[in-house]
Amino acid sequence: MQKIVLAGVAVLGAALMVSSAAQSRYPTLNGSLPLVIGHRGASGYLPEHTLEAYMMAIEMGADYIEPDLVATKDGVLIARHEPNMIATTDVSSRPEFANRKSKKMVDGIEEEGFFASDFTLAEIKTLRAVQAFAERPQMFNGKYQIPTLEEVIALAKTESEKRKRIIGIYPETKHPTYHIALDLKLEDRLIAVLEKAGWNNAEAPVFIQSFEQSNLIELNKKTNVRLVQLLDADDVDLNGKITFAAPYDRPFDWVAKGDKRTFGDLLTRAGLAEIKTYADGVGPWKRYIVSVKSVDANNDGKADDVNKDGAVNDADRTVVINRNIIRDAHRLGLLVHAWTFRNEPRRLAGSYANSPINEYKQFYNLGIDGVFSDFPDTAVRAR
Ligand SMILES: [Ca+2]
Ligand SMILES: [Ca+2]
Ligand SMILES: [Ca+2]
Image 1 (spheres, rainbow, N blue to C red):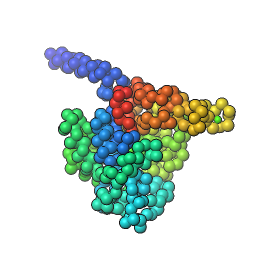
Image 2: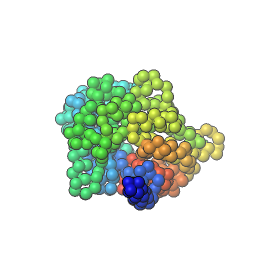
Image 3: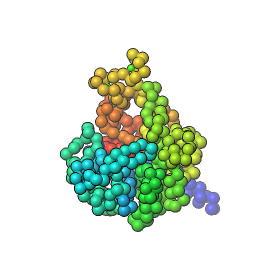
Image 4: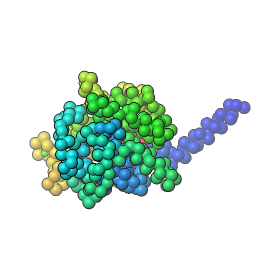
């Protein structure tokens, strides 16, 4: 009798899985639709990492919003892509902060600018965000504040309630080793904020991501929140093969401890199995999955300007499927969330015929579990 009941449950389970997979149309790991992650908010439209940019991503249908995290002098986690605020805020035009200009080593590279760790949160709140990409709208510069992680969580919760759908957060620990050297270690601070929000658990709508490995291994021991290992690279060669060069060749904690492997080694089957011991997914640069190949008809070793617009960029390249990383990762039960999807024609391979929809559809059809997009409206439309 018990056997029959169990068989019935199994059939019901299978039926549910089929219906949800059919619903998603795409071969994702768990049969649900690929997630649209608002990369730095709707950063294609508004200055990145502002509540306004996150709000726009939510309005456009993003499932997750993505705050990159750095620490202030007083140890508060704020949303910035870089510890150096010179390119994304108006700090360099503020005479009151002129004496804060300094040089610091960030992952082996010397930078000059205004670093978050030299400013209190109260001081940072007087700054205003600016658009860092010259080709994107500049009209919102000087209008929006720099948000804290707590404010980003509050926005996600309020909007989830209002819209009757769950909006998650996808925080990235930026430069964990650098922050340890400043005595502003990120991980316990992040856990404390998640704990306060009631989101320090496996069921919370949260993924924590990092390009470094040691801090994810540490986080895996301290929290049940889902973790994603990011995987960078330098570029691709003329044939579409991934190339490795510092500082994008390996996690900086590996540089610090002399581990000579590259991010590419983490995407071999053995590397993925290693990631599986501490993380729930991988976040590779999209070129690991679908790369781009150049034309070099004149054999000078450099990519040609195929579309003759005076610039050599992705529009002159054609797509080539690299290795089936999605399949390898899925076999191990790892999610795959790739980055970064952008609408600008120069960032789209010629094969997509100027339509970012075609790029999303290719990745969706390959079974990608999530996409980090600067233009979440397009990612949602393609889905
Ligand atoms: Ca990020
Ligand atoms: Ca050439
Ligand atoms: Ca061109």
